[in-house]
Length: 270
Image 1 (cartoon, rainbow, N blue to C red):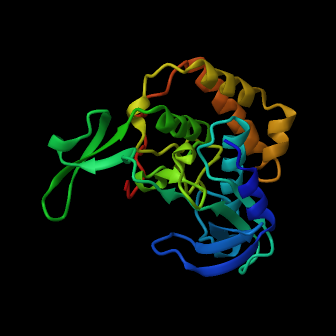
Image 2 (tube, rainbow, N blue to C red):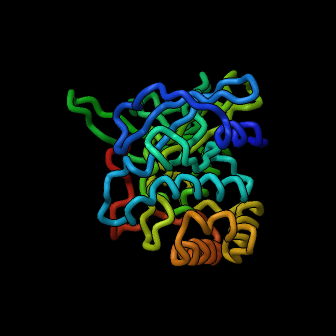
Image 3 (spheres, helix red, strand yellow):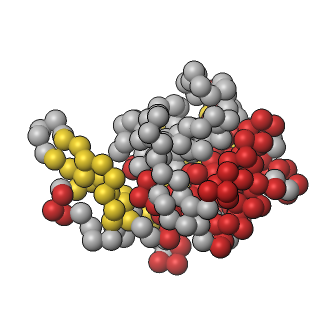
C-alpha cells in the first residue's frame, strides 16, 4: 500500500488544531493537515503530554508509535497507519498519525451475545455487564486481522484492545481499494521483557505462512536497513530484544498460545 502522499502531508503539511480526543490516557489531539490542496485528519500525541509509566522509559511512547509504523511498513504488513515525528506542532515534538476513518464493513473484533457471534469469528472470552448481560468478545480470522496479530507478536504489544483495531481507510474519501484493518495506539510496544497483552489470541497454534517466516527471518537478522529505520526510536537493548523475539517465533513455527503465568488480556479489553 503506497502511503507516500500521507507521509509527505504528515511531515510537511500545514496544520490546524481541532481539539483534544476524549478518553485518551495521554494528551491526544486531532489536527487537520493541509497539503497539495487536500486535507487530512491526523492524531497528534505530544511527548510533553505522556503520563509516566512504571515499566516503560519516560518520554518514549511517541517514539514507539513511530517505530511501530516503520516496522509495519518495512515488513509490508501495512497494519499501522502512517506515522511520523514532528517538532513544529502545538505542544512540541510528538507523533503524528494518519486518522483512520471507519468504514461500514463488519468489525473485525466484536462484542455480542453468545447466540449472535458472527459465523467467521472465534470467541476469546465472556464477560457480564453491569446490567447483567452476558456477552462474548470474538474476532475474525481474516488475513487482515491476522497481520495485526502477527505484528503485535513482533512488537510485543502490551495493549491491543478491541477498540484499537479499526476497519477503514487513512484517506479522506473511503474507497473500497483503500480499506484495510489497522492497529492504532501502539505506544506500549517494544519492551525488552515479554509484555504481550491482546484480545487477538484466536490465531494461537496457527502455523506461520511463508511470508510471515520471511518477515521473521528479516527481523531476526536485523539487517542495516531495518536497524536504521528503528534506531532513532528504540534503544539498542530494545532492538536486540526485537531480533530475539523474531528468532524465538521462528523456532516455535506457529502463533504462540497465551501463557498461563501472567496477564494476557489488556484492561479494559474493549
